[in-house]
Amino acid sequence: MADHQVNSPMTGQVIEISVEVGQSVAEGDLLIVIESMKMENEIFSEVNGTVTSIEAEEDRNVSEENLLMTIEI
Amino acid sequence: MPIDPNRETWKPGMPWERALEDIDYITALGQEMGGAERIDRQHTGGRYTVRERVEKMLDKGSFIEYGPMIGAAEYDDDGNLVEFSPGAYVMGLGEIDGRPVAIGGDDFTISGGSPHNIRKHPTDFMQPLASQYGIPYIQLVEGVGHSAKSDEAKGHMGLPDGALWWRGIELLKKVPVAAGIMGSVAGAPAAFALMSHFTVMVKGQSQIFPSGPPVVKRAIGEDLDKEELGGYKMHVHESGQVDNVADSEEEAFEQIKQFISYLPNTTNDVAPRVETGDPPDRRPEELLNIIPPNRKRSYDPRKLIKLVVDNGDFFEMRRHWAGALITGFARLDGYSVGVIGSDPMFMAGAMDGWAAEKYAHFVDLCDAFNLPVVIFLDMPGFMLGSHSERKATMRRGVRALIASAEAEVPKIEFNVRKAYGVAADAAHSLGHPNGLNLRFGWPAGEWGGIPIEGGVAAAYRREIENAPDPEAHRSMIEERLLKLRSPFRAAHKGDVVDLIDPRETRRLACRFVKLAQPMLEKLAQKPKRAVRP
Image (tube, rainbow over all chains, first blue to last red; front, side, top):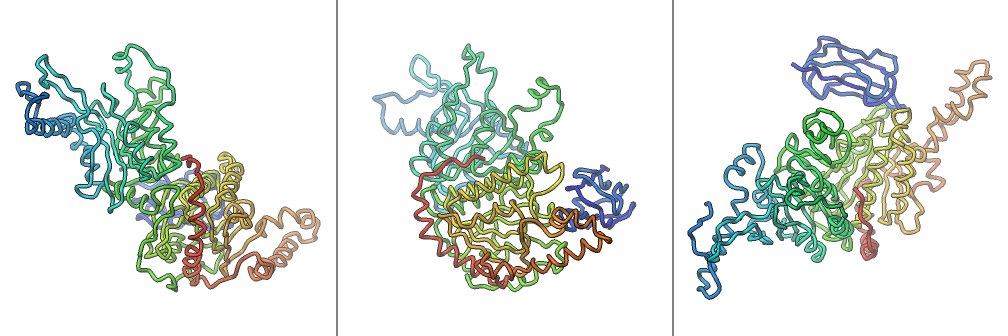
């Protein structure tokens, strides 16, 4: 078991969180949508695992490299 | 087969047949490289020996080796060979799909690939050969560079003089240079590897750095393993030092073969046309609706590119670095082209400092090898914010702009959606006196100096603040400007050659590449500068 951290690839506003804590995710699943540069940027899972914590909040800004959520793999 | 100390060695005056036996005998000793134990160690680590690598890269039986008998040889007083260990480099001339190449690689089974006490080096033969013959140069690098032990042997520490490099730099001006980074590579071998037009490393097997973990720990106290310090995550994903990553050595060889397949033999040639069997007038129906109606939504830009190019074959370079921009090679109607695309799925496709650097490098590469450039632009502008500022985004953006304007190869640009500000100008450079630079717009095209939202906020700030209902006033101005964004209005003014049905993109791109061929022939005659990696 290892923790995989999902960090924001860019600065912007979280407009949608598509998963919940405890949920299983597979590689390629939509995790979160960040609006930035007038685009809805979809962040997909790079791993298979279970979401153990979500740091991001909807309608809040995030900076590049901010922790969005943790997935246990 | 170890050396036989009792064997009588051929000497002048003895029969030719005996000489031939000795040629076979000594060559066979050389083939044993650093010995069975070291070869086993190479294989246990999941790695091929340099001889296996060369064999796998080349067409069967095509290798002509330079200096298989070069090595440290000791003869006794009677003139019999009593010791032989081959030089730590294997090189020669070979063919890939019938095309001549110069190829070589470090023999890591001997002293870790570091220069042996005898001289056998690519600058002796392989580099001048590639330069004189005008053929691609492939280096399979696995060595750790200078050894402190060699200073002890020589009895002095030499002042670095740079003499190692000029041939490599000359090659960058003349022929395609591709490097496979096959293991842990440090020091001079690392620099040789990176002095290339294309580099690939093997996942989990290759690392590259000026100095490895022990030296790093001694110098600055940082305690990292070699993979953390110089593995593919560091250099293919994060730093961009190495272009591509492969899952296996075989895949790395395949990538090198693909890379050179798109390039001419020299910068003074034009890449030959290949029969691909894909009709130039094919209409990819899916292009019509590939751009989503909601302009905040993304689409798969690689799918777009693959729908246009011959048979969907697209060889991407620097895929994992500076992701807002896509760069790679493809064919259109059989002609080689460089492809640049935006990736709206990564940072909205906005150009940050790294994407700008990737842009400038790729355009330089295409210009050096006389490849026309096909651009699929969806560029919202420079990436904004403090993170992007730290990458010197504007200065690097200007660099991309200059590279693009100076590139004399013709470009064709499809404005598939956004094209805003100076960042988009890097792609445009329309009106350059030497360029057949064609711009087409798709119906989703929208462009300008600044997008409406930000533009209104900046230019109408006071007017909006003073309005009775600022929010409503802002919307009113935005609505007014929105009408101006129609690409038809720009088309009336001649901003584009034409607005087109996206399904016509392939046909037009193929026509363009064909029409550009006479110009490419002329550009090929010009001397070229070294493409700086």
